Image (cartoon, rainbow, N blue to C red):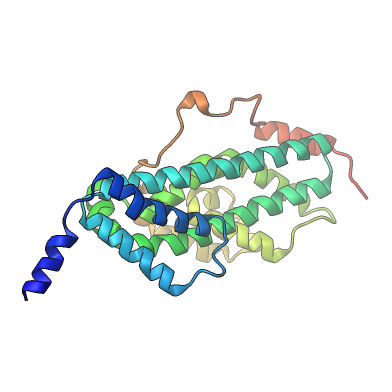
Length: 263
């Protein structure tokens, strides 16, 4: 009995800042990077369990707010790294103006979104205790909602109009993406930004079971990502790309109209 009480006392002794960094955040950070970079193929279940215990211990030791902020900062940095990759690819697509380059950009956007969703599915269970102790009662959101909102704000909102314009063009060419790829993208989009599914009803009806998608959105309206508090970290407005950095959807449309089709 005394041993159990002593263990609980030790568990709830607060970390110092240096202990938090060395014993908690540094190993947790390395694990999260593996998932975000999709390099966790050889990740052992015992390591996953160890990380879960590290997060649980960190919350008990009074670092729940710091841990949540560090998680969001790490994911924000990762999302901006992905955005830079997409910015570069989009500029190449605009310079080249070929259907091949458009298709490559479409596939890259879809693959990055799919990889991110898979990473979130692995990361969220690790933070279950933080979710129920801090994020849901205090932030009135969830870790999954917050991490999806980061991707939506930083990447999806920057490129989605371009992606839909490209898709409308490519489906009428020999470079059209496979039905499976289109279906995957649309389901991922409906998951992250349900309002876009409504705006693109014809596309969803053509490539997905549109009625099912929209009934799910209606029935789960309270759980929609857009209803979550916008607490996700954002860069200051001054740091966001201007028109000269991020081509407008209108420019993408004009590019498609004037493109030369590669054979």
